[in-house]
Image (tube, rainbow, N blue to C red; front, side):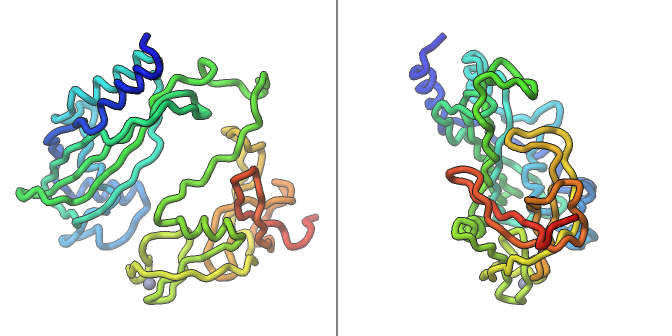
Length: 312
Ligand code: ZN
């Protein structure tokens, strides 16, 4: 068994090495895969249909996937890196997040090639799942004979040794710390929203071209496609548009059953939140609610809603 420092150094040495070289898409961009994707996503945008269809940008990774038999071009370095982590006891894996950039529009018939590099291996980290290392790869997806950059796909996994030798049963309390609510994932598309929350302001994005409000925050306008936006501050008044009651599965820091509500703000947009102060079985569609900012721990404040009048 190598020491922690030695292992860290050996892992770092993989940064910059290739994970896939000259990979090729198993199929060219094609309408059947686009149709299946749109059906699965419930995306009915007409630009993905018909003779002039384009591929949904978010399908970027789909064109590089190798299926059950894998793809050619996978490098030994990536397998060696994962093997090293396995040997160190980090035998579990979970995908944590992905970032994509879209450069060119892909259309049926386009042939895809790609290269993937091991971008970074983190320091040793301890998470609720266990202790291990985040491994980030970055894939450049190219198109056509000129191999023009169509987009990039950054993918992060955690390879870890499970905490406590496996999943704890509920009710098993031994020296457990109180669970903390999950942190929001803040990225460049929604950073302004979370900045607003920090200042106890609920900000709705507004397209500066057609004035359409949008929530959750997105990089462009769903109505006219314009990228420019400003914000309006929500009044905080709304109603429960719909809700579900969560019984299972149990999540740390949540105490089921509890109601998760889709709140329709008076401005017209809807957001998912919690209704606090009302028993889960008293939450109703149409219930008038008002915004509050609830502090959950030292660095987590979330917008939540409370019934405007006591619910009988
Ligand atoms: Zn617009």
